[in-house]
Image (tube, rainbow, N blue to C red; front, side, top):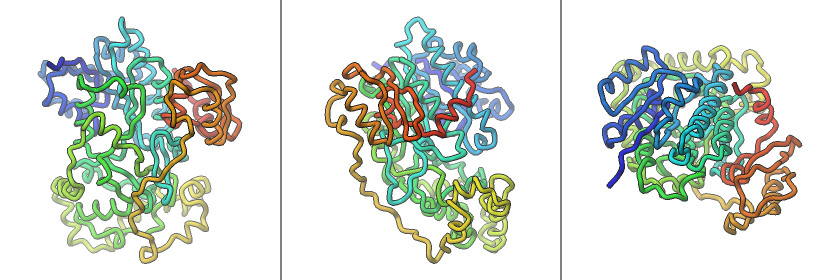
Length: 464
């Protein structure tokens, strides 16, 4: 007989969190506690749950330790889905760092304050943004690959730093699930944002549907999740069928919202060449093997589902000349401060270098008729993560750590390591000669080997 749980869910009014909340309430008998920032939008969204004796709403902020402690106390599971995300995170980087890092500090602290901390399981939702940009043909990555967040992506940096706090916390039960881009029916209602053009057309992403993501939050609270699942890192996706280039995604999305194809309403040089995030996963099936959360909806069927959610006024796109739509889209690409064309217009050297390489490379972007629109290889490469992965972790020693550091262009500076102890932090050095402490678990399984940018971000952030 399955035991009903006490679950503390953060981010319950967000895309993934709300889907998870709905499924947990409708499909289980668990007791739910929600910590929600009180504003008109959130009050309205949670109105359907008013009066439900299995849902307790605590109005407050994740940065308030006393509120977090109130919600964590008595919880069997903490589903930490909440936080600031893009595009708002791009606009308010300092607040993003503050919210995303201090929230996990408070949650870990509150779990440790419990009479029996080992009773509480912490599920942290990370992001594909932590992995960073992967160019075709090197477009595969997994959790063992070194994280390389995009320049100016404070959201990704905050997620890495928050994940490290959890992974190095000493808690018995934790897991990091790195979420991919989420497909959801209401996606079309959010409209076009300048971030659309930050995404390279030849970039790739292995998407996750919101339904799979919500189901994942239900499945992870099941009694049958094995012990070996915990204290590890996993990538979330809806599977290989959801692997798309960003060009392929735009084709499907434009069709869903009744717009002409990308070739008719965009120019190729509105889109960045690099410095976003996305990859095809080498290892996303591992999470499915443990939790069996995928509903296996065919992707063409899913985009038909999205099409049904398109507001009626979008159908006017069928009769509006493509040139008019293109004029509107170009205005978005020219948005002050965030538009790619605005960076060219104002000669923003930092942004041009990060997203295009150089002004000359931007000028040489091929037109639609010369652009490579082919789907890249789906043959997963054989990646050398180190010889230590050929033997049990109980046999790992300091020599293995030195090999791993060398593969990453750095060094392991610690002189000794207790054989098989992958949770005690060691001293490492990256190729820029920055030194940092991290456990072998986070370096080898989580891909943590920070470059100079990440080291500097960590120094700048003041953890309140």
